[in-house]
Image (tube, rainbow, N blue to C red; front, side, top):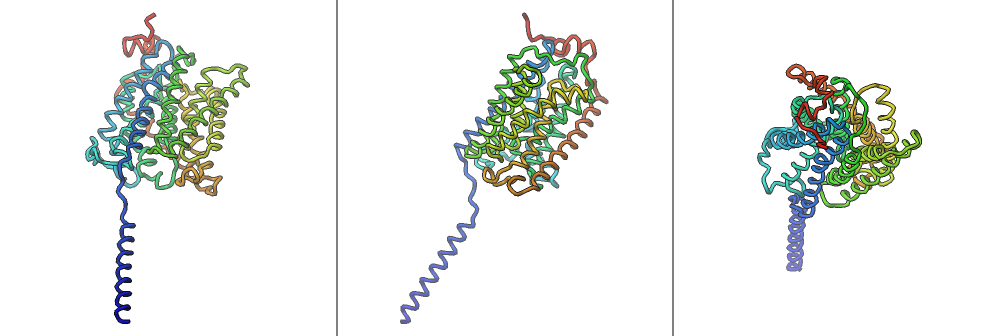
Length: 433
């Protein structure tokens, strides 16, 4: 009996030790491992977002500009991509994604990508790949603004503006939302750039044109609608990397973001076209292209949070509202936003960010739960994030312009504007026919 009791006690001790070992193993956090599928997809997604700026945005804006300003318009997108590519690795990535200082900005410990080694991971992908993916977002955000300023801003002033605006506007806002800043801590949802990219660029566009003043000829008569259509198509294609890539993995969320992006864009293009058709009796290619962009913009913050019904509603609202923001609101207020950066990117960005707070479906992404799914507070959080972005961007953009005007001429002379910026700024012309 004593032997049996001893054996039972020994077995219980062994089981207890085994259970403790298993429990301890369960508590040990698993180290993230490189996933080659995720890495391959993110390399493709990064290349797609790069394609959005050059040549996508450059062609889209270039085709919309006057014939005498085509090259200058394209050059603004090209030089922006080059500048941001350098500044991002210099300090932009570090200040955006390296830690958090009081919810406002990151640190400089990853300047020049210091410490970002070949084996360093961000989730399941190399950190260096994550950094260049984010670089492409920074570049297109700054380049988007140029569409409002074309045909009147000195190229040298645009170069300096791009450097200052990326440093003092884009980097802080991106940190607030994506880098662990105060908006992220508050619970603001922005899957791929409603606040960080589109509201940011749209407000900067509006403030800038109010300071720059109107062009001598404010008519929008595209010099080459074929380029506009090609540019819009390239943007749509690249936007799949923009939105689906923001899942940072090759998974179901990326696929959902992909179909949400495509659906909202198609619906917005149709909404714009049918609205224009009803008002003017003619559907235009420019209208279709503009509706596409409005849909792409509006679904961007919501792409990884809403279901297919949400994407349809967001696209329809964006196409309808943005048509009137461009054709009715701009003429009534009287600002000269040359290529409707605020009317499309700003307005659709605001719509998309707020509607994310309504339609965010936890069945799609457990990180987001909107008004329709029992969380009315999310709508207030989204609205507050939009207001914070608008106020900060407006103030900082105005300060940057005021500083520029102290040290250099920002606007070309009347003679250069009449002659065209291709000749006056670059000594070139787009069409040698």
